[in-house]
Length: 296
Image (cartoon, rainbow, N blue to C red):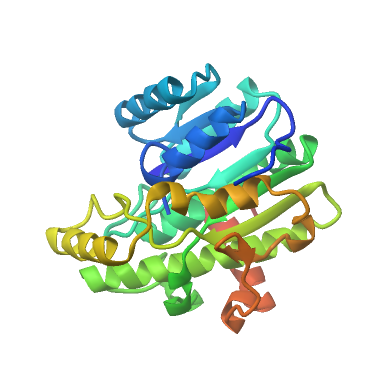
């Protein structure tokens, strides 16, 4: 499971044009930011694949400020270790992009459902551990990649409390439904985070990049991979196009008043479903996530 964040040696003020730092839209975003002169840190689980991506980005951009750090979002101890190492080695953090995405069956190292644990909980813990650095570096931003599939999602607190997962079942269909639930969690996390950041110099945004043909299903069953591949071939956009809304939320000036909003096609989506703007659900999810992560 791969995660991407970007650190700049100064504020990112340049104008601008679901999935990992070393593949897909994550790599495309990293490449774009490196071209702009940002100090970019690729935070990934698979170090061999990530190093190959890092070398590609360096070769394509000529940047010497593309670094690699170990992070497994499916292991909360790995998240804590990453945050500790990052805070020791880096003087500032101007932009945090929560970009990991997994749609598969199974459990995390901490026995949470894989989709919930990686897509939401790992990002939640990491963001919280880095908040002080973000505030000290302000104006700064947190950008979280979600999906329009949130419309099929829900938050079942009874299931979360009892089973540490967003739903029951272990079929391919169940894995996809859990993915949808986790994407709703991403949006509610950003919505609540924006409230808690009021008065600070940190803003946050969630977004859907569009249907991008990436490797999100590469750890899934043969059936899952076939379905995602067919959908990708029929409906997907290329990774550079898919990166544009991430870059917009990361770099565009003048959107600070839209903190907490969900973006699609480089614009805030104003007709969100009520479940994505439910204050009580967002607050309860935050508090439960704090408990799961040992922050409360």
